[in-house]
Image (tube, rainbow, N blue to C red):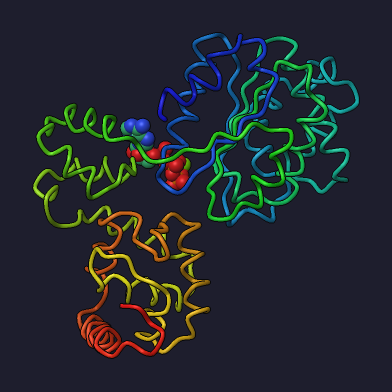
Length: 341
Ligand SMILES: Nc1ncnc2c1ncn2[C@@H]1O[C@H](COP(=O)(O)OP(=O)(O)OP(=O)(O)O)[C@@H](O)[C@H]1O
Ligand SMILES: [Mg+2]
């Protein structure tokens, strides 16, 4: 992972070839996608490439091609007028309208952006970074796909980061784009980060509690007093933010699971605790699995790491914990027929 990942994908080929592709950097929140995209930007900058970048914002999903507008507007403004017309002919006016946010035919917009990026790429290699493409509107994703088919000869590299809570964007672009899927850091990498923070002797503990999730590792190392026990406030905020995409019932399922300790739990037991049908609980668990909050352990689930569980536990109101603990005791004491425990 880390530099190895981008090195393996980008560095192993000649730069000329790299600039004729699309790369999706995929993975759960905090796994290091943006860091890797920044790495690609540094590589491009250092080798004389033009870097264009934009972030996709969920709330601006309905704004037509907003990420492309953000990425291209400075260049369009810089070249406005005759220079732009020299580069892209009749598309210049379409680009200027797009940059002003004026409504237009999709096809024209796609053609104009494609022509502009190809014209830029004739002068110097271009890296277009689109951060958080999972939050983009449909037109933006469509245009990325369109670019892959129309710019194959151009020195244009599109790097997009995609959170994999939902695989729709990755599935849509998988054909033309290369997918780089990030996972947790191995123990050796965690040990290196711990050593760099002057906490080498705590490396095993950091790995045990984070299971190598990079953002968790960084946050935990930032609070040396809490490495063995406790949850940094910043981590509570991060875990709560990750719950926001789930509905109320799913959140209750995870909070109830957090009272069961570090052991694996199954949807049947949780269903008993919450008086919910196990298949409903199973669906909630699957969504949490897709978000990287849970992992599968045999025929049961576990929290992806202890810190996630603890963050949930310590942010659940105490009276609610009492209820869940009581329900857990009853469910475990009186196993229904067919339940092997
Ligand atoms: N390999 C790594 N080594 C050291 N720190 C890392 C590594 N990967 C990620 N980090 C750190 O972890 C944190 C989260 O990384 P990053 O912002 O890249 O995640 P992300 O996948 O883009 O998350 P999000 O989906 O929330 O945007 C950052 O502080 C980053 O510097
Ligand atoms: Mg990011």
